[in-house]
Structures are given as structure tokens and as C-alpha cells.
Length: 128
Image (tube, rainbow, N blue to C red; front, side):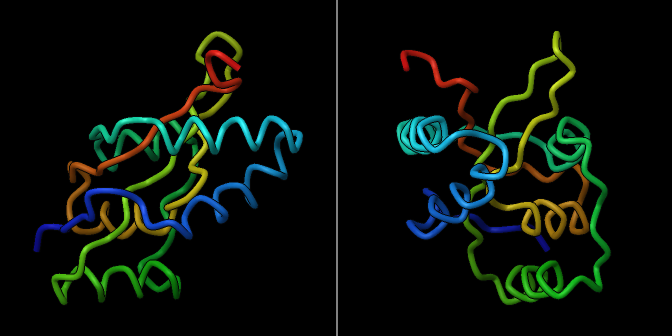
């Protein structure tokens, strides 16, 4: 069953992303990244590529949050797009899934080539 997506991330996804990013960046940097994510256009990336670039392991289907998202997919409910912070190939910095790791994993289980709508911001955000 194909994954259906909302056109834009849900508003509560941004504070969730900020909470995660606060572990990696200063409060001012987090504020700038979240602002950049809100302004970023929605683009599309493959589930397998997001996981590879983030260097994160695929969570088990039995993970409660992945399972919950898979149930939503099978019910035809729309998932929220993923919020990403670009990695740096030169420095070896991995892509950061600021919000949506479980949704990426659930999508991968439907098909590793699933197109996932994402918003992608640079670190540090350009123009900041």
C-alpha cells in the first residue's frame, strides 16, 4: 500500500524538531534552523537515501512508533513530511532527521524506494 502524505508538516513537528536539535546545537542555532525549515520548500527523497545519509539504523517494525505509523499507512491516513538538516560530506557530518525518523522507517517497510516529502535546511542556515 502506498504511503500518503500531508502537503506540509504538522505544526507540532517543528517543536519536536527543536527539542531534538537542542541536543546538537545552541538555542540560537536551533531557532535559526527551525525558521529555515519552516521556509524551506517541500521536496522529495527516497526512504533508503534518507536512512543512508543519516547513518541511522532501520528501526524494527515492532517499534511502537513505527508500528503506529504503519497502521496509519494501512488505514490510508496521511503522514507528515519529514524535517531534515543537511549533513556535510566534506566534514563527514551525517544528515539529521530532526523530526520523522519513525515515519521514514515505516515508509521504508512499505517500499525502500518510497518517495518521502521532506523539508531540508542547511546548518548553519544560509543567510543567518
